[in-house]
Image (cartoon, each protein chain N blue to C red):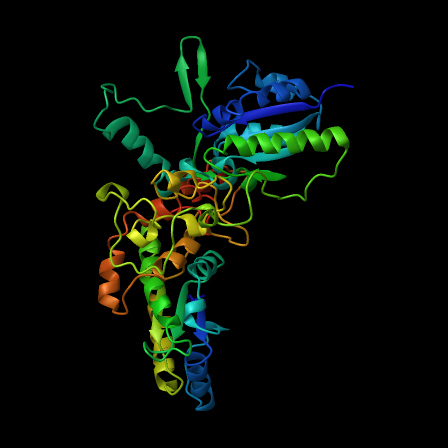
Length: 323
Length: 155
C-alpha cells in the first residue's frame, strides 16, 4: 500500500513552526517512515508545479503554518485545500493571524513607507520600494502582491482542524503525530471538524503553578520594571498576563520562566474574541471604584491592542484597525 | 435617505430596564433607534458583546446599569465601570470613535433620565454618522484589499 502523503507549507510566518516540527526529535523518523512527504518548502526542494500536478485530494494531511498576506499565500492555500483530504491550520498565524496580523493596525502603504523609507537603520539611497511588477531587459518580472489586511487561513479556505501555539509545543506536535498515525493505521474515526488539536480545553492559568489570591490591581507594570516574586500570580503583581484568556496546552512554559503569558495558544473554548475576554478579566480586578482613578490605572496599560491581540488580531471581531 | 443610527442598548434587569419600562408606562417619547437587550447585570456585559455589535452593524452601543453603590449584586456595575474605559481605549486604537460606546447609570425611578440618555446618545451617533468597517470580510475576487484598489477594480 502506498504511504499516506504529507505536505507542510509556510505562508506569512517566521519559520518557527517548521523548526517546532523538527523539534519532535526522534519522532520525526516515525513521520518520515509513515508518511510520504510530498511538499515541505522549508526542508526539501519541491516546486509549486509539483503540487499543481497532483490529483485532487491526493495529499492525506497538510499542516499549513503562516497567515494569508499575499496573492501567493492565497494561491497556495487554495491549491493545498484542493489537493488535501485534511487541512490543518498549524500555529498561531494560520489559526488566528498571529504576529503578522498586527499589520492590520496599519495600512499596507504606511508599512511599506516606514520599512523602506523611514526606518532609522535604512540604507536605501535609491528610495526603492518593491513593486509587484518590474521591467528588466529580459522582460517583466513579478513578485506576489501584498494585501492590506492579513487573514487567517480559515478566512480564505475551508479548514478541518486547528493546532494553536507560537509555535505549537513539540510534545503536543508529537502527540498529534501519534494520534494521526493511529487513526490512519487502525482506521479510527477522525475527530469532528473544527477540533482544536494539540491543546486542552482549559485556560493557561489552569496549568500555572503560581499561587493565586484575590486580585486587586492599582497599577499595571511591564515585566522589565520589576523583579517578579517567583511563586506569586503575575497578574496580582500588576503584570498583564494573558493566562485567563488563553487556551492551555503549552504547559505554562512562559509563566514558569517568569514571563507573563502572551496568549499564543489563542482563545479558550467557548470564547470568540481573546482580547475582549482579556479586557473583561483584567479590568474587573482593578482596585478602584472611582472613575477618575480607574482612568489613571487604565492609562498604565501599554499598547492594549498589541497586548490583548498579540496573536489573534485577524481572528478578532474587528479584524483590523479602521485607518 | 437620511441616516438612522442603529443602536444596541444593553440594560441591566434591576435598574435600567425597569427605568426604561417606567419611561414607557409614563408615555415618554424617545427615538426608536435603540434595540434593547436585557441582561441581569451590567457586570455581565463582556467587551466582546460590544465589539460583536459594532462588527454586526450597530453604529453605537449604550450600556445602562444601576448607579454605583446600588448594584443588586453589590459590585457588578463596578466591574462594568472598569471595563468600559479600557474597551474605549481599545476602540480608539482600532480607529473607531470611542464616543460610539457609552455607559450610563439609570435607576428604576429615572424614566425621564432614560429618555434623555437615549435621545442624547442617538443624536450623538447621528452626528458621528454610520460606522462602516472596511475590509471586514474577505473578498476572494479582490483579495488585495485596499479600498481604492477595490473601487478601481469595480469601476
